[in-house]
Length: 412
Image (spheres, helix red, strand yellow):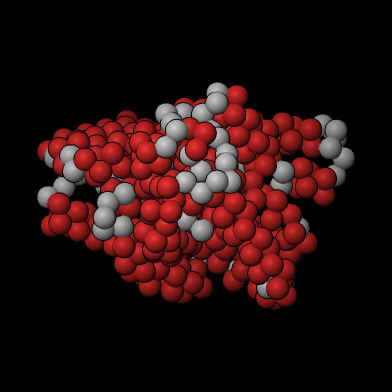
């Protein structure tokens, strides 16, 4: 999953950001059938994936050297990462477009529900021996993302909300230079951002003894934090089109409202879900009779959970910057993040095991978001927090304290 996410983002060549930024320019100046935006977005993405495949084949020996000792299964099924990444790439580009046409609910269903349901079905078929061996299971699993990408494309075609044409439109000709410069900068920022999300798991798998086992323990904590992050995708998808339009119309009041509301709503949800999981995690591991090794994921979850609270509580600052005329700052702040996160993750993993990357992630993401908050405040007088943010944190801390006092014999 981590490797495929990285490959998919290498292949996309910033096409989702291109769709976010320029959607309204295409929509306002072209009829649907003359709108060539998605044609070029998908073609560029496919071209990028071809480059990634060539690079992946060329670097196979490096992968074998880095992962062969601690994560042999990753090496064995290396080639099946590519169809998985291809599906993820196509889906993400289509998802960006679907968000702009108001179909965020269906995209979240495909990614958050259908993908997990299909994976669950594969697991059940494997447990019941309908899928006879692990080899076939992995190969079928590698095709799941292609399936949901095809489902989303079929839905958009059925609703007649997406069209393809090879005729170069006047908008593409007019904005081509700006599009190229924009995509170049955002591409660098996107790679850095995605690398910061998956580098910890890749490092654990490559440098720690029994790397895949340790990555699995870390992965449990990471998976649980994705529950905390669940509303973020919906909020981002709902806000993108409004942010893009607000910048186009120079509506600073709308930008501030979206910024604040995205911050407080995500902060409330993140604090609530984090505490519910944290208060019950040890008991859940015992109740579901998970391996004792998974207790090592408890404090990893604590740190990664705080990471998500920080990231979600600061609102849609990344999307505000990316849709503005100061989108170059995304790359600048991303480089700062990379300079901090990559070496810290490697050395902390060596020194502290699987908890090390979680410490590195929390420290790096906190500084990263502080930099973006200060930038938006100084440049545009936009700020995500109010007294309600303080109340939220105090209520969360108080709720945890009361619960801990009542049930302290069973809680971490």
